Amino acid sequence: MKTKEPFKCILMAILLISLFTPVTYAQSPALTITDYTVQPEILTPGELGTVTVTIKNTAVNASADITDIYLFAPRFEHDHKRFEHVGILGGGSSTSITFAFTASEEEGIYFPELHVVYSPEGSLARETLRYPFPVRVNERTSMKEVSLEVEKDIPVEIRPGDDFTLSLTLTNRGETAAHDTFVEIGKVKSVYFNDPGNYYIERLEPEESYEIMLNFKSSENTPTGMIMIPINFTYMGLSDEGKKQSEIAGIEVIGLAELSISNIKIDPLTVKQGKDFTLLVRIENAGDGDAKSVKATITDLPFSGVKEAFLGKIEPDDDSPAVFTLIPNESGSFGYHLQISYKDDSGDHTITEELSLVVEGNENNGILTVIIPVILIALAGIGIYFYSKKKKK
Image (cartoon, rainbow, N blue to C red; front, side):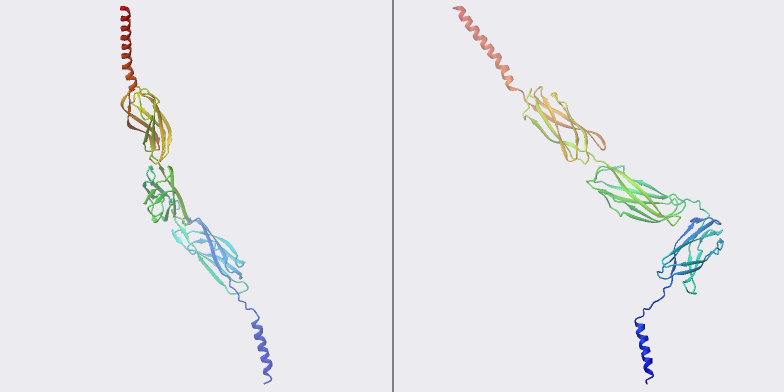
């Protein structure tokens, strides 16, 4: 029984040591291909090409001992070059390798493989990474890439608040198909979509067309002038690289002026023959565009005085007075015309308003004209009477 005591002590010591001794595990290296480049992208049969690959050890705390890298391509001719004993690739590190090869004499898409043989540093166990990559062999390397032609049909001009339609016709003018085409319509201030702003076209063959109808509405507050609607395209063609294309659809927003007479004032209120008076005509713009070079002219009125007034520019929802100073040469009721000429975004315009005016005669002058001769005659009669009476005496 006493001989067992030393063994118990030894077991207890081993247990205590194991409790306080950290356990470590060896991490294995992890190689992967993070990138590859084939040049040229498309080879003709029998053409010489290259492939460059990037190898990375994604493990953090383990190194890889790369013993061999070679190209496995049964359908291609190549120099069977091997990169033997490349060396140690530490955790998180990368390296690039380039191989040359000759494309097959037959057209098609081939998948040669890159083989990477490695083992964890300090170990004899070997692992092999196999990475296939595509190679395109095509006789028609001179074929045209995808080329999108965009035809835009849009109104030449609109007014604020108008609805309008933009028609886009996409035609593939290249010799290869376009696929995965996305169309994005950019936003424009005060112009709104009635349809979605994004479109997808799965495939567009050479010389094939696709039409997109876009419905818009402009705001009542859309400023006049040219608005630009951006249109962006992304699509895939012969190569794997996405292509981008941008277009602009321009449309002119014009403002039209609408002039009319809002008020007429006469000072003094009673117009008398021979007395000058002021005629004030207020002209308002009820349109959505500026009226420029506004001029008002009185016609068909046989009066002297100022019959033209220059008002300049009248903005929308504003008015301006045309002031005329006239002297009526005769009395009566007169019909006349006020002619208003102006310019807006659509060109030159002239409107004519028919007006009337009553001129009273000067009644006091008429009475005097009658009374004065009577008085003169009466005075002459009285003078003759007293002269005759004095002569008799």
